Image (tube, rainbow, N blue to C red):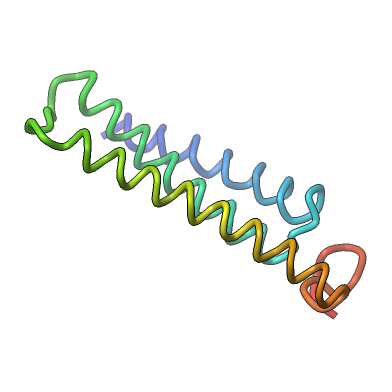
Length: 106
């Protein structure tokens, strides 16, 4: 029971650091908080999956690798699409995506 709690604690720390980084440093505002939460969830799932495999509690059946690769490509494509959408929104409607300079809506 201790290991999942440690992973969860590490995930919370990573999520908070990314939230500050994305929301204020990168300037995504509330979208940065959402992105940080999503990345944190993926880090949590990945760490738990890795630990289950490392300790021999889980072994995927043959045929799962192509499925995982396809999912990874889709996630990567969605991230690129999100970045393009944010960039276009800032170019087409400056000041509307993120209102004030500090990153929060007006």
